[in-house]
Length: 201
Image: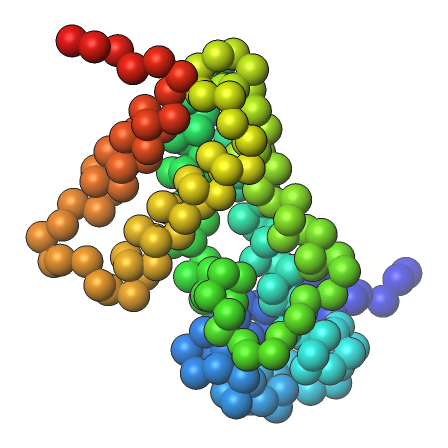
């Protein structure tokens, strides 16, 4: 009978989430492997066994953030309307950030000075936005969006959602601000701005 795995996927994810919380709250100085292990109820040996050391752990946190983010974007099914899909991807971006705020700051805000992700993490981060670029491409091909480089529209959309989400996560929006409704309204207005023709009333 095989021996049970002590250092399993559940433990790996617990360590990554807790490491993300420590890093996003107080930066690299807060990430002691001994403290991390104690917080999760395991040993430093387990941390080394799973990740190899602190640099590899930080890279794994970054990679896990983009894996989750990419999975959420890929999980948005195509509706047949590229503009609607464009908006739904923007909504999924916010959902991902709110679900994993401790990873979001590490993924997008340079919370770790000097950190350079490894090749796999870099590739995963780059590929995570592929659903957005593909949707923009589909909208351009259908004549819905203006014929510009898809990356121009995708990056501008990223700038809007990142700005709004960052304001929300940092508590910088007015208390009476309806975040969810205003966020979707902004996404739809942005999509309308890229339409190839403007409907006059």
